[in-house]
Image (cartoon, rainbow over all chains, first blue to last red; front, side, top):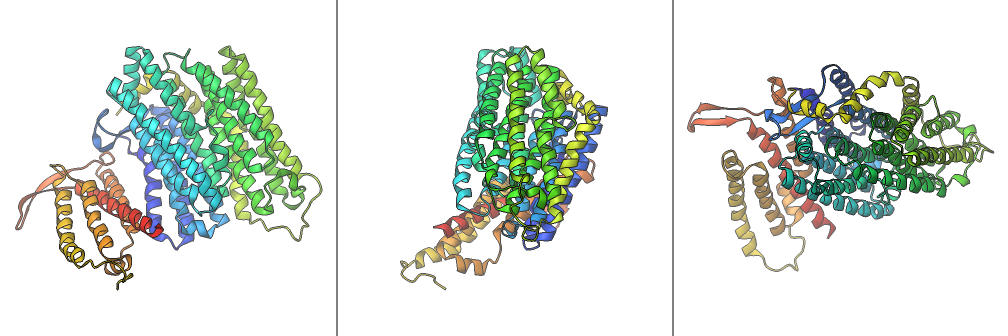
Length: 493
Length: 145
């Protein structure tokens, strides 16, 4: 019994639902959402340490043993992501609190954000496929709300596309679940893993695995990313940062989980396909980041490139590649939030979307400029920032697996990413200032606080990677050895 | 307080509804309570209860019903979800797993030996949630048209 596992999901739900009663008190809404997410962060850090010491935690809801009841399984991989996601979403809420968009705050912005985090955390922690679906839906419903909140025309256009594409993929997900229940008679991940191993993953199951690959690719934006840039660029800053940091990462989590725990017997088919998809994503994303002058689009395509990069590690299918993916996943949650908040702040200050229409911002806002440079370097994977270790290990994994071409594409994409953000920096921050010191829009220090925190986190993660190493090693150990997960999920109590 | 006088004469609808609403409400409560051992429960009971409210909205107009039942149904839904979640957390106080339920038999006056169970709290939350959500959705759709 590990009731602590349920808190990352239940605290945001309780906070979010209680806040519905405080519609007209924005300050209560802001601070209680921030504090509740911070509490979730500290709880999940505590659980992470406990998992490293005592092994995988399991919680059966209502005392119903698997496979009959709802089960939450906390391993290092899941808990690492829960911790990072909670911390980053707390900072996004903090930014929203200082940005103070009255219209959206009155329309339940914070409850939606909290429910989104609840869904994300639930998806990370759940131990069966059906509840993964349910948590995906919680997360998506909240995101539909956030997407259309405010009701601007552009938001509704992009919103309807986003809703339709996600309903379609949810339907495919449900179809996949039905197929797998029909063939194997269970939906508990650990039991599925056992039964697939016993059956040796015949072609039928490999086909079903491809269905899951399609579904999760759509959620993650792997190859099927056509919905992503449009929808992310119509959102207000804090919400777009939350989306960029969390939503696609849940898809990536599901991909890594299913293709290491369940369908790992035919890597020649499934992992090769994942490798090709990662390659296409890297190429498409790299073209996107340099093709656009709209900085929101550039940021959105940066999300796409990162997804391709993380899955290069999964395609390598060896311990070092997976470790690299985990490092990079943690780094990417932090840095994508930072980049989207920075881009949003620039637009808030100047009202300009195009990078060639502005220059010299660093004279007006020096701190913002230096944080942007730091974020750009971290995004490109320059040491000593947090992206470096992940990139290095993903590359090593790829080369160990003999996928030289993928390794080359991954590193080439890093250069494109670095170029795309440095280009924003050089164009918008460098050069002749266009706005006089006296006329510039005031930047409240409160809005800088989350940016400073995120910048400190990405630097600290870079310098202090060793602190993260035991957890990442434990996580990749569980991912590469499914029997540890099975034992933890079925026998530990 | 008729909003629209050009509407057709609906005396029969209104008279029948006034009685039918109570029958539906009773049936909803019956479904809700029978759910513990028989088909029924919070979700279905909630849907039935909601249909009574919806019937009122169809028969009379929004303003009349809102005056008679001055409740924000969004808050009903929120209260329901909160009740369900908190009843799940209640189990933690007794050192049991999240969402654990228990029951016992009590000798109550009038009713005799009665089974009381904590799952009723959870199910009431579900019922309130369903009523709140269904009514809110339908009111919003009607406002759009």
